[in-house]
Structures are given as C-alpha cells and as structure tokens.
Length: 320
Image (cartoon, rainbow, N blue to C red; front, side, top):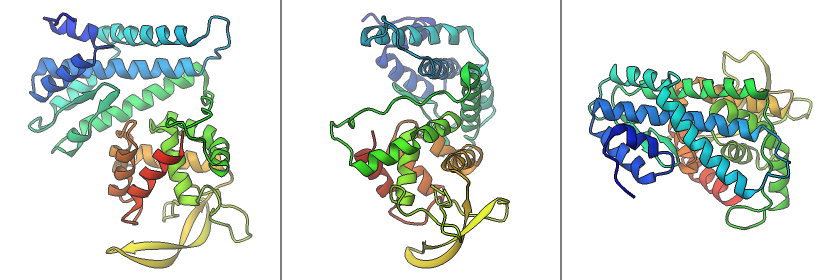
C-alpha cells in the first residue's frame, strides 16, 4: 500500500486501514493540533458508523439479495460513507476539539483503536473530563438518531453457539433469551454491550435463581443488586447480603430497589450507569469485558474484592 502524504489522504483511507489508525494514535499522542483534529474527526466517523449500523440492525433483512456477501459490501460502504460524512462534519469533532483544547493537554492522549475509540489513558490524566462528557453526548446523540429510525429497535438474534464453538447450558441460554431484549434496549442508552450487562445480571442473581424477594414472596425484579438509598422513591425489598469491609465479609440486612418488571430493572440500571460520573470509565470500556468489569469495581459498584474477576470469567465463558 502506498503511504499517504497529506492529512486529508490519511483520513480518507482510515475506514479500512488499521495501520493508519495506529499512526493517527501516535500522532495524537504527540499533541499536534492537526493530529487532534484528525483524531476527533475519526471519532466522529466511528460514531456515525455506529449509528448507521444500529439503523441497519433495526431494518428487516429478508430479501432475496440479502446474503453474507451483500452484508460484507454494505458494511464496507457504510464505513467509507461514515468517513465522507465526517469530513464534512456533523459537529461532534468540533465539540471534541473545543473541549479537549480547554483542558490541560500534558499527558492526555486521544487513543483510537481499530475497533473503536479507547480513552482509558486519557481519562486517567489530570483535567481529562472533557472527553468522557463528549462521549456521553455522542451516545445520547446516537440513541436519539436510532429512536428516530424506529424507537425500540429489535434486538439481534442470539447465535446458536458461543464464539468458541461451545453450546450454552440450558439454564444459561434460557436466562439470556428471557433478558436479551431488555439488555439490548439498555445498550442503546449506555453503549455498554448487552452481553456485559447480561453477565452482571447473571452474577448478581445466579442466572435468575437467587432474585431478591419482596415481603410477600414475589420477585423484586432487581437484577443488578441496586440498593435503595435516600433518593429512591420507589418500592423497596429487604434482603440479607454480604458486604466486604477492609477485605473482610460482613452479613447485613439492606434495602434494595424493587421493580414491577425485569425491563424496569434494566432501564434503572442503564440510567444509573449513563448518568453517574462514577461510571464514565465503564461507559468507555467499549467491547472489552475485563475493562468493563474492572471499571465497575473501581467505581465502587461492589465491595467483593473478586467481583471484577468473577464477572470477567462469566462473560467470557458463558455468554454469546
């Protein structure tokens, strides 16, 4: 492949060239304003491509011309269309540049990976709050666009086997099928992959077998172990739980939120993750199950010192 000689040429070929993405990552780390603009434009392109993919997923595909080959070429076309639209601009890149330039740039880097945008290093740097804010804004913008194409887009069908070729245990498959639609809706709000949230719900409830009960014995539908603090105005269920204080387990009776349906639980969880600044790194974990799990633990979601390791194993070993 012939190396490009201009920024415009580089941006034009980024859709399918991972080497250019790596070069852009290094240029952005060098702190060049031009490189920052390119990186922000590429973020905008990836955001547009995510939006187009969501719209495609929401469109029925049952025609005679729908096959694996046409899907491949459609994906390639969408990637390049995203690049072309980003060069014209929809405003997100300019907003990113303004926010990042208003912060102390010193150690901050806008790192772009071949499968999306990774801002883990930037979030740990001093004065790096602009990027997570912009990413949340991008997610909200994408969600509004998807809703405009058809609110409540249908969740994609679950594959018959896991990526490693194994078949799921019956109780695992049943839980995933029951909760998949709710998890997909939460993904549209948070950007967190549905299977990550399904994994957390499975860990908190033992695949739905250890659900917190209301006083009358009915299910609280609390799939994520969210406690009922002073700000909670809804129904409450009492349950005995184990909390770790200074690494030592303690048994306590705590108040937990109660919901009418599992869908309500997923919606409340999505609202908590998307709106609480504590979980910015969880939102930015992208498709990395381990980063998602560690982000939750660092944010104080659970006191169990092994929570992240348990959740990571569950997602990787059990969910499609």
